[in-house]
Image 1: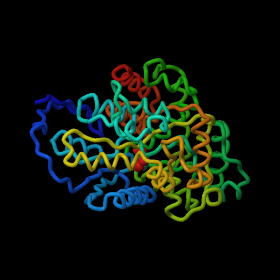
Image 2 (image 1 turned 180 degrees about the vertical axis):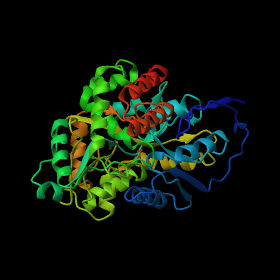
Image 3 (image 1 turned 90 degrees about the vertical axis):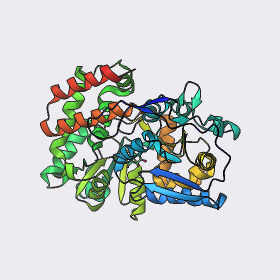
Length: 424
Ligand code: GAL
């Protein structure tokens, strides 16, 4: 019997430490026919639902006898899925496999506490260790083993904009924060909401903040936020929080009532000019029939050109998964070149492999691929790459407060105390 603990749940202020007695391990279990494969994700939005279906179809082609159960839990950024998953994992009823952010998101939450099986052999047995960038391998690894297989690389620091609005108003998309405020002022004067921002899933303000932090601190300063080298209560972070608060003068009035996808839709429909969001927005725009470079444009979030805030969606193998052999097959499809090149062009992300078939990717995704190779890469906190779930969710709470009270000093103090607790 093992003693396990659940370190963090997704929503709210919770940081739970629940000691659990694990269910008996399967040593004496008999070989049995595995019939199913249950996959938990939060991919329900336009683009991502279709991308997942395409990947499942590819799996079914190869393994027609396996009954795949596609268990999605709606809620952008995993706002609901993580809680559902946590209770299943702790209750000894894990799904076969689940979507989880690569980086601190899985390591700090599930690996350290021994909920996951290593899956290094999937890459080794197929000679794929060298086709994934070492940086990606590193963030999936703990004590020499890889614990989940990446299906993609998403970019967080993208500003999507309505090209018609910019043309009609004779404006250029802003490359710097100063330019952002100039453009926003003009648009506001003309009765157009400059910036669409969501809030229902609790992480959208953090998503915008991570870009602003990067713009104010640069890549090294930003990296230092997660290992304790950059003070959260120093002048630079306070300046970033000040910039964030200034941006709130230019957002939609219903921020707390809309999702990140609603915000993207505002831009598509011309109800707002810009939104800062990950490139699943590209997948969403494709799914609703828009054309990149005609209906919508993109640019790195002002002040972050030359930098790429990355996150990766991955799948792992929980201990006690009911159908581990079927999971191994799934992870092999996920890791394969064909799997990645089937999923990502629909999802709006790029392959996590270095040998993607570029012919399958569109103009936006090719630009993202080129930037990923060339730019300074830093991890997203809003999507589990930079900090473990407990830190991420409490940062989200601090950001929800600052949107309400605009109290920079209080936010900086709270964020410093989180860093004191979590940074390593
Ligand atoms: C991210 C996830 C993306 C996308 C997004 C919106 O956390 O990594 O794949 O699903 O949330 O829900």
